[in-house]
Length: 279
Image 1 (cartoon, rainbow, N blue to C red):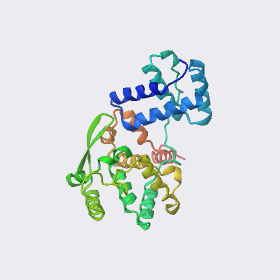
Image 2 (image 1 turned 90 degrees about the vertical axis):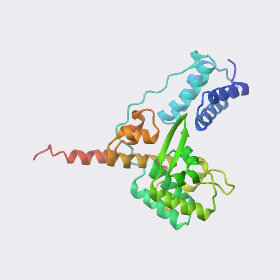
Image 3 (image 1 turned 60 degrees about the horizontal axis):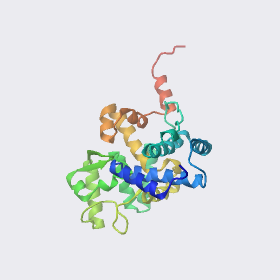
């Protein structure tokens, strides 16, 4: 194979679509392949080139990010029946504790809410609470509609899986008032000025604008961290990881375990409570 043509990329994109991959997954694969093509330039696509690209990724990105890109490229090579081009992903030691510097705390969450309220930004104020109180993905925000709010539950279709997400009564009450004030008749609750559902970039931009006034580090403020906060809070109260996996829409409990990891500080406090040390 001399190069990866536009036709090849388009055929692979259609294949992913027919395999019913989510829009966000397809977008991610296309982005990874596009960057590989840019790096490749006039080089021939062979195993040596792919290994060289892997090495360049390792110098720039964290292991998980490298593996994410490699999985996209390997999927393309399988599609092209060029299995000899596939490369091994990096071995990553299982993380036992969550990074204290990256996890959003409940106190920081509340500061972000106060900042949004002080700025009179109702949209992001209620959006944060919607994700925080339901644990939905940012890509699932479009399913929070006027009809869902009235019904008290949303029917979400994500990654080929259908699930019901219940909306807390207090959240529904707040959103009904918001919908009325915004004069939204039907469809998605959180929309742009043009009436289109908010996407990931819209939400990121609004969240980052709150960081300074809320005194919360920017690296902690992104949509998925509100989902993590929901998961940790739910698990701390219920201690039911199987139920939590169902609520979050995870196929594997192992994925859910990542969301419920405690920090090293929390683990240390628990060790102190064991009462197994005597002077």
